[in-house]
Image 1: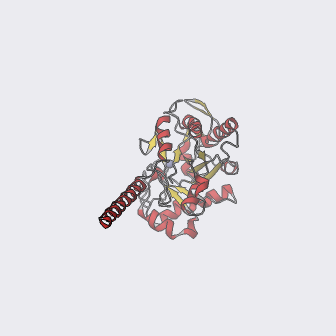
Image 2: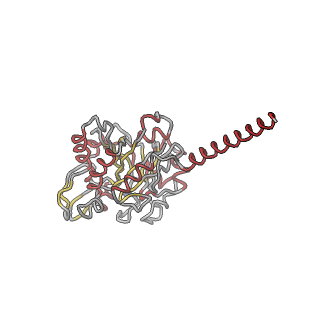
Image 3: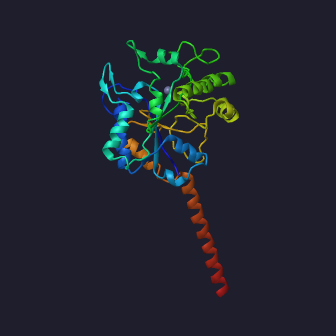
Length: 311
Ligand SMILES: [Zn+2]
């Protein structure tokens, strides 16, 4: 079984069309997913299945939705300074639910991976004097039943953050986060802060900034220090489906507006991603082909022996 995870940025608002606006794309994609017969489930369900903690049957034709960076458009309807009033993700989900009926998509859910450091958010998210990345909505979103708040790191090692956890203040890539101290800053410190805001919940999923992770993060820090970060899985962003064989510390996602096949830019491409989840992976096709070939060969041997013995 293969499960597509979709990733959006609610502040990707460069116009008011599907191609230029992730909020408009998401609002449209929910109906596409529904029409294709897929069920939207919480991202955590997919992780539980990968970890062997959830029945496969609960994820048949499932898709999960995630959001990166934690812009206020995740929760609020806001007047964009250039592109007018935008319906936020929370209301997009609620309006969709009201439209199709809550029993039609009973597990409708989106997971929001937020940038955590208040200073970094102010520096990255302030535009024309308005702070577009606040945290007072995190608890309400997390307790809404349709959204969860998880970590997208302390400072994203973002070029616009003045001080970052990175050892040499070398910004713009998450690949350089490769020591215990940096990981504690980016992961553990971030989780503690979110925990205070969404108490008593703990954010146990992580999404790597830009989908990037060092070997140290994937192979040493996450598997080696579970009592510190209390994280159960981490997401990258290079396209591809989540399977039971996926690495729990680098689960793939498809990105809205990312170039095909790492992501999709149209309804048609999204439909291809969804339908692709129903196709057998190449490995199982090959195994099936080999099994058929072997049984044909056995049958031929049996027929030959039979005809020889009857001669
Ligand atoms: Zn990001």
